[in-house]
Length: 259
Image (cartoon, rainbow, N blue to C red; front, side, top):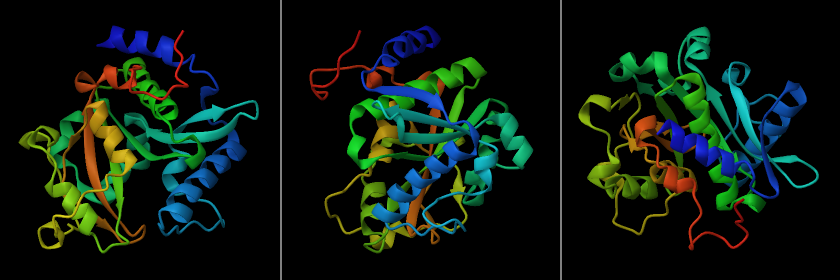
């Protein structure tokens, strides 16, 4: 698996028009926060509590490494996610997900578990290219740091009162649900049993991306009133990482060119 990931990254890094990087310095972090605000607040209707207008930030930003994708000659940031390492989680005192979920069943995984959060992509660059770069970089990060597990919260908007979130959760296949020993419980559980109405599901790209990468859903839905969203926790062991997800196929967009 490690060799597959290294080979994958050697090809993905040459994706035309895009470049992987880590945000450095306050101004680049601010650029990431503005992109997050644009995606989460302006487009998804999430409510931001940040004191800086037009930004999305919280205390975890200081402890995380911010992986970014830059585009074109301007090298503006068009995709981003932040990574909380096991050591940083010890420094801050908890994973961000612990504000919504009881992670005691994952206690033994902490020394090798990273948390990914605040993933977002500029709407003008929402192709497979940016998503692939981020996932390939995360896999390489895990290998280089000796981390075997990745967790992250994925959001579903609740402007409809939670019906789509409930329908999505009820229509997950058994293969997409984590084994019993890896399941966690939300503190504020969304009663999806009462909200499902059988309507066609609109799956957010973030959740689809996690599932295609090989992640399990390891929680019931949690309510997040601050963002007006429902959250589910996903768990991706490195051993399950689907390297084929980041490889080109005949079905991918025509601008894909691999060296």
